Length: 289
Image (cartoon, rainbow, N blue to C red; front, side):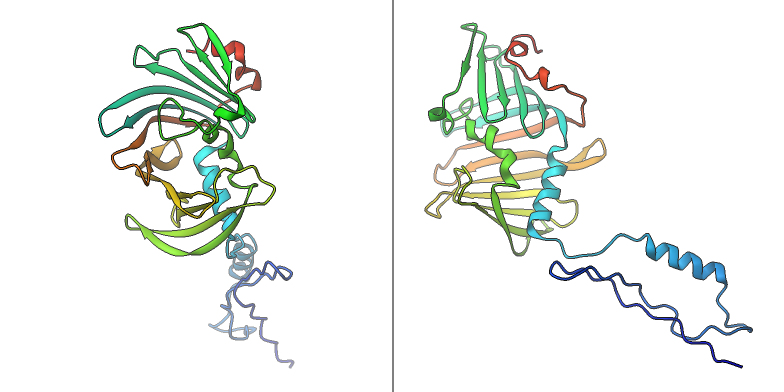
């Protein structure tokens, strides 16, 4: 009578970015199957084991770019609608602006100001790399020239360029994983983003802390071309928005200007809205509410 050969043991799954993919299964069947007796594994159990392993997701070490891309997709989606308050804090005063924001990634966004009364009805429109402002007080649409892109947006610590360049976080940078650190008790990846030579990026370097659980962007430091840190952007007050868990509270703090910051608080945020690009037009700036 022939001896049955022991079933093949397959080692743990590993994927290498430099070699061909290798599929593996944790080795549970160490002993030969017997043709009869109490030690026999039912055929159905073996089949279920094979199916469960074959359909299991591949486990591999993520690259820094993949981490940033996944976090970016979570934060932005394909399209969204938000109701936000922005509080601009200066050493001598502060003011709060309420807004509605429609976006269709990565090229379109429209911001409608609902309060205070003196600013109500003002609209900012982004179409690809261009920005327009609708000023109801003078009934005019103004296209911003390149020379104004680095100026403050509505007196905040955000620039007009922030509205345009934010979509290039994946394609215009080289990403490097620097290590792991904790932010507010959450384990995070620390990722360096250095602009590619051909990219039209205003920052010399960006450092991001992205949580391992949930891919939350909890902190971003921005550096100028001389390597000096210019500002810090933090996210907190984690909550559910539909089926996504995200920070609801963000603060942009200029490093060298004590007492100044801009606070964004999201009261409502809905993703994957069905917009047409024609919604984001100069004509609609005057009609949107």
